[in-house]
Amino acid sequence: MRPSRISFKSDGLEIVGQLRLPDAASPAPAIVFTGPLSGVKEQVTGTYADKLAEAGFVTLAFDHRNFGESEGAPRQHEDPQGKLSDLGDAVSFLATLDEVDAERIGACGVCLGGGYALRFAAFEPRVKALVGIAGGYNDPKAMRDGMGADVYRQTLAHFSEVAEKQARTGEIAYMAAVADGGGEALMGGQEPFDYYGTERSTSPGWVNQLTALTVRALITTDLAAGADFISPTPFLVVHGRTDDYCSPEGAQSVFDKSGDPKEIVWLDTTNHIDLYDVPKYVDPAVEAAAAWFGKYL
Image (tube, rainbow, N blue to C red; front, top):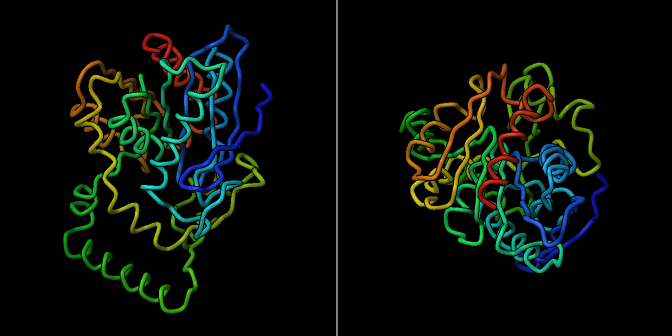
């Protein structure tokens, strides 16, 4: 399905996306997408947006501020509050379209986007159904417990020093997003490189770079808190049983904390990125998401 290039404003920034219109009667239900850390619209969210458009939904995958074709600075910087604002304005954009039934808009998040979609939808009544796929449901307390309280505090102090240096010099500190063979990168390990560093994810908008302060954003932003507020919005969790980057325990935790209606679907994955582009895993995830949105939108 050929997407149309669109743009909308969020906090004065131009946010660029891809709109897919299904071969279905208008107005139709719509889904807004948010995806992995550093990801752009032609990658994971584009894959899911394409397949769910084929299932009859209007879909919108877009580049969050600071990434891809969208405006915003510093470039390649994770801005949690900005991402939530982008999602709100994406829903507003969809609601203006003649092809969209504004009372039937859902949200779908993949990887870190699963956490953002949860946090967003929990406080946005216009979102009538939610799906998180291989979601990263960040929880600062869990981060602190995993790192140890002293190490967590030392890490915060380190990034405060980075922020001060940037304020003095005006120079932004960057890290590689992925690296081959165990090299230093913000998304460490071979698995992220096997997707982002190869032809599997080729996109003109993706850059192998993230700000160093992205780490501070990741370990301090509470996305899991959305689970306490998501009900009565219907919430579907789709997650792999094997996932070293977005833990199955985290997915189970937000599911357990959330209220009804809810459902969890476990897939027998071999790793996290199976749910990015491997049909054996993506297809059942799409099938579950389409059924959920079909039921509740």
